[in-house]
Image 1 (cartoon, one colour):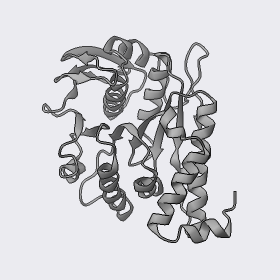
Image 2 (cartoon, one colour; image 1 turned 60 degrees about the vertical axis):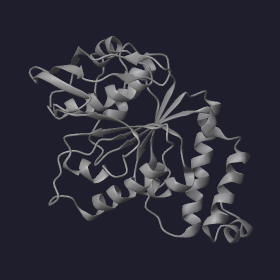
Image 3 (cartoon, one colour; image 1 turned 135 degrees about the vertical axis):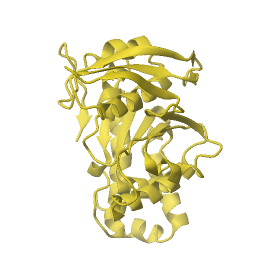
Amino acid sequence: MKLSDHELQWIENTSGLREWIDIKNRRHDYPSEKLRFIGVLEANEKTVTAQMMAYMLESSGFSVDIKNTTELFYNTTGEENHLFMLEEYFEYLQEQVKKKKDIIIFQMNTDFIKAYPLLQTPFDVFIHTMLGMDSISIGEELKEKIESSKVLINHLPKESIIAVNMDDCICTDFLEVLKDRMVITYGLSAKATVTASSIETTPFLKFYCCIQRGITTKNGIEIEPLEFPVEIKLAEKNNVYSVLAAATGVMVFGVPPDGITSEIFLFSGEDRRIENEKKIYISY
């Protein structure tokens, strides 16, 4: 959809752009007010956090769509291209409302993060999953993503729950912007809210998920500190982090620990297929 000359002139400054976005929002009947959102920020596309969450949420009765934001905000330059991406964003949300989706999981790229202060998608949960990098190995692109993420966090709704990996060395970069925020930490650190113990990797990943402090769900239910077993048909130990992140995200939406235990065991990995002929439909 090509923007008109009038629209292009209208959005030459930030205030004009915000007004343009408000008009587009009204034109699409405020789709973000009819959906719930999870944002997943990944260092790469190898993690399966989003797929795990979609599987468990679908199994709990939610209708879920996963969207890699590269499909909306790809690496192009120029004002008109950027605005075209915003139009695509609103059309996508409206389409999901028509499909009666409950929850959208965004796998976020840098362009989406940069546009967030204008979009202000009302994320219920924002999950930071970067792992395994130190200050030497972090490239310029990742540094840019980290800095943009700080801006994103500053613009998140105050009621958003932010989940961060406590084992990640760059987690400290976010401490300032996490002040006065609702934060759930996960990882193998003894200080994390959601952690793991008794980890086995043969023949597949098995451990106990430990909730060390209470978690309040979006519907007001308190999940008390407890341990519950997790078995998943993935072998690499790093997948512990994906499971912890996914478990944190779905518990916020009310999936109970025993539901996580039963559903994660059936999760088949990155083929994005649900066993017993159930499927998650993912927009790529």
